Image (tube, rainbow, N blue to C red; front, side, top):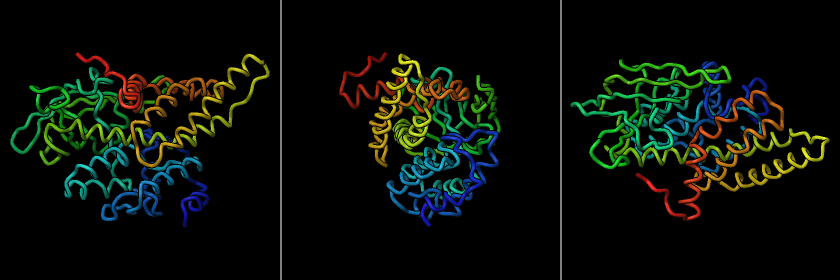
Length: 343
């Protein structure tokens, strides 16, 4: 059965919750991921031995588009099914892949991303959470913030400083973290939407087994950058949702306002076409789409009159890489402009 046919039969499918599973939908999300797995639409391009279908990135992109057209979640949670999974597939050991990927694709394991800190957001390499080697463990201490779904996650992907005496990009390691270990505390952060989708996470001398290191010691920056490229690539599927919002825009009768709204719709259609050119594999060019979507979020929400979207819109400029970071990527890696001065 094709993805489109299967989706048309899922009358009781949940509404699309986006890239990040809201904690209040934890049970529903896990059940939906299990249905996707049993139907053969989970981990489409993963190796078969880890629960996938062994298909191509083009098949994965087609699934994302069909799910978006149907208005249902394409997967449980991007952090686990895209970021953590691709980091493990590219850099993990056979033992790590076998331990983590099958329960993740079945919806039995939810992941969170432990990257940002109070003093290291856009300047992620400035993070101060440390992981000190002690025999066969790393002792991790520090604080993370804006961690989506930390309160419902069994595991997390963590960046921590393992060598403080080298350039900041070169002394970071990438770890997978069991969120049930002693010394981990999560505190919800209340948003202006009234929800608490994010948490701050405190790590107090958490003893993490050394075999939780993913990739080379002190080489976590390269693992993280490859991982975040996959996050930007996932944004390309939002072209379908953008088209749906554009279709819902009503033209005002006032000619001045109508002109302004028509300009917005025209920009949106151009951005939609750009997103469709992204292709199945992420690249730095996807920063163009990410930036455009973020900057259009608020005016689009106002144009459609959706109050919930209006309140959520400012966060689009922060999540998945800030608009400032996207402009740097576009300027430096696409346009070839001089790099931003760094201290």
